[in-house]
Length: 139
Image 1 (spheres, one colour):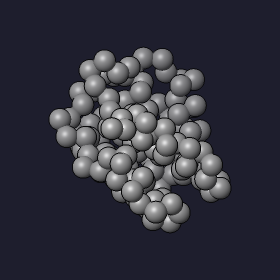
Image 2 (image 1 turned 45 degrees about the vertical axis):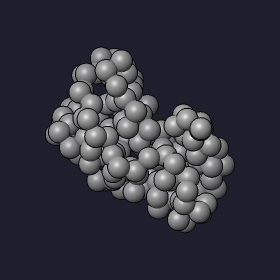
Image 3 (image 1 turned 120 degrees about the vertical axis):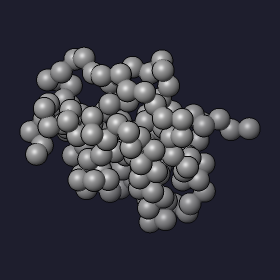
Image 4 (image 1 turned 30 degrees about the vertical axis):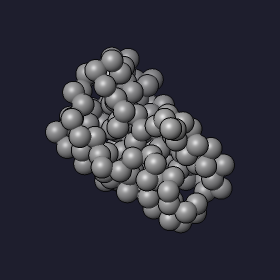
């Protein structure tokens, strides 16, 4: 049986080779980080994953734009709050994304996965928005 990590690695090959300059790979990095975070995850991993999902889903940022925000935030702050992962972290899993045909169908499924994970973290939405408001130039 193939592990979730193996499936993620396979999806990473797809997104890293993707010709779209929007850098779709950042979206899967953030979705996977937020979906698989547990109590042992470093706070920065969860917070940055959720910031990336917020910017992508609610602000329509490309993966490349999200990556720039992550770099900006990493320079400004070194300590991040510890967020408690929800029990359910989204109904869509990596296997479902890979089951979609490569191209437009899979790319849309990646977005659906991001939405699913972001919605699962609903209890942390306000905290993520507050962090961005205080720590970035994004209004």
